[in-house]
Length: 145
Image 1 (tube, rainbow, N blue to C red):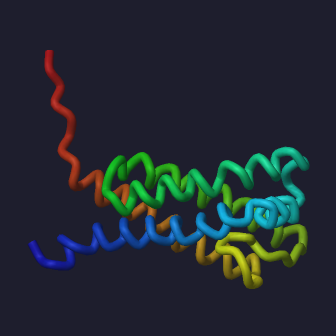
Image 2 (cartoon, rainbow, N blue to C red):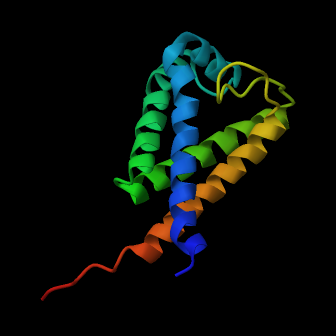
């Protein structure tokens, strides 16, 4: 087995986990600012913006840590993929409505919705690759009668 085939899946998994850890930490440190970012999307009612800001960063952090550690990789990659689909739908709604706000993804700095959308597409592809690599690595379950 070549070194690329051996280490690429691990590198993608760790990189994706690290990205989600990096994205979660500023949101956890300043939940009020993140709640403002969520509210600026004008999708969720007031209460749900704050609820999302309280829960989402910890979900990102847990998935990131588990991806880096290699524990429950498929479940975390699936959650990360689902989160990215939701983020991409929210970003697409910003673009369609003509709103030019900061996505609030990594805290600080302004990121255009188009840039954030393309970045999330890369993250979605990475999550798909992690799922695909894990499927290839994990042996099928033994069925006993």
